[in-house]
Image 1 (spheres, rainbow, N blue to C red):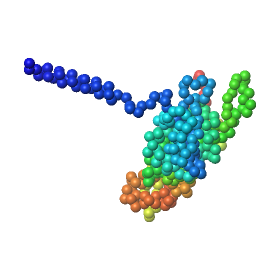
Image 2 (image 1 turned 90 degrees about the horizontal axis):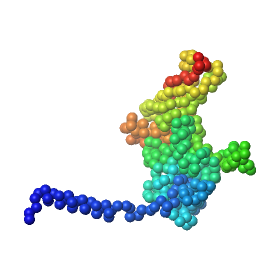
Image 3 (image 1 turned 135 degrees about the vertical axis):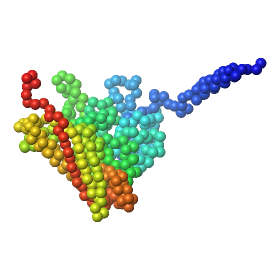
Image 4 (image 1 turned 120 degrees about the vertical axis):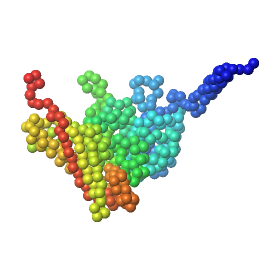
Length: 401
């Protein structure tokens, strides 16, 4: 019997449906999948150097079936001729495959950063165990492993500590930078900007109780050292060349539009004023005069006053103008001094070269190979800062009046 056209259509649809169902059965899942319980989940790592290769540590997530009194992390030492070998050598002492997609921070020792991190960038691009998302931090000093035996605020592990600070500091002080591995890789291969990284310093813990005797009848658990995150590490190509303090880092964030909020305190007529510098935006213009680069920097921001010492009266418009002038002068001086310091290092971490490329492309073609050592280092810098006091804060009148 000859099938009608609609019967043929139904037959084709049913065949297509059964083929789709068969495909789902055959192709679902991953052929090389591993269950979470079969993985050693890395939350942070430390890379250091030896005379013959590399050493470091992996901070692994503690399995949930362990005792609640134990640390949520397990720290394992690693060593190898290369970074990739060192990571895989952890399987000599743990019975799970390393898993790096949950890593939150990677630390470099100062010695390794000064030697050069190019091999890490190569490893990052080639090894499926590596991940470009973790924040890169440089640990100052000669004993970087102390990071895993130091107070880390309220966080459960070091990686979570760095991630939390990246959110908190960006909206409060702007005293640090938080760049991930991908950011650093991009800057390394960018001829118009050099890389920077965040900095961690291990310092004595002022709340450390040596005998751990408790306080007010309660148990107090403290460690002898604590991790402090502030400042930035300056790179030239792949090598660490210097550090910048928190004030210089704040100026860097103003220049690169990385500051959401920053705390600024200025002196005026023998008293101090403190406010939040909000949404600072920089406008950078590049020009050439007699083959010398001129960089014109203009920074605009709003400032909310949060504390004013007597006898300053914020209700007085003349005092307001003086406050704006004092803040403008302070921030201008900090920015100018920061740029001049970096010029002596001959490494353009601000990305002025990118502005030159965009604004003066013909000049850039001829000078990009000498940008850091010659043109940036000898550039003439001018800085203007325009701050508007957006809110005066509370008056000295009683709120009930």
